[in-house]
Length: 100
Image 1: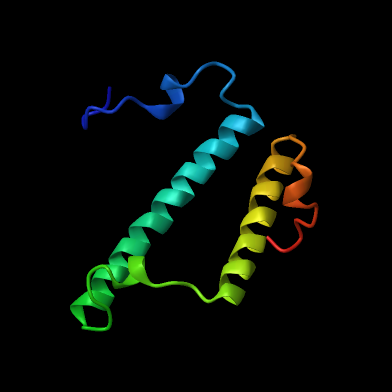
Image 2: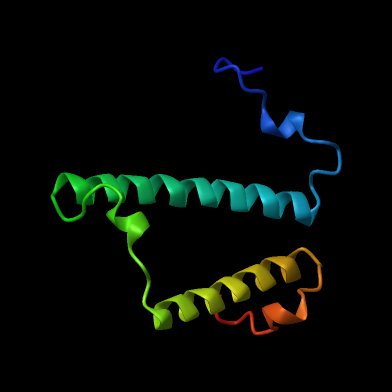
C-alpha cells in the first residue's frame, strides 16, 4: 500500500495485465477521468460567470443534426477501440475508424 492507502496499480494487477486489453482499459479509464474532471471544471466556470445555470446543460436538447454527428463519432470511437484490442466490431458500428 502507498502512503495514500491505495495499492500500487502495477503490483495489484494480475500477471497478464500487460496485454493490450488491460492497457487499453487503463488508458481509457485515465483519459475518461481527465475529461470528466475538465468538463466539471468548465461547467463550474460557466456557472460562476453567469453563462449557464445549474441544470441547464443537462436539460438542453441537442439539435438532431448534432446528435447524429455525435452518434456517428461514438460508433467510430467504439469500433476503433475494439479493433485496437483485437475484437471484431459489430456490423452496426461500421468499419470506418479513420474519423476517430
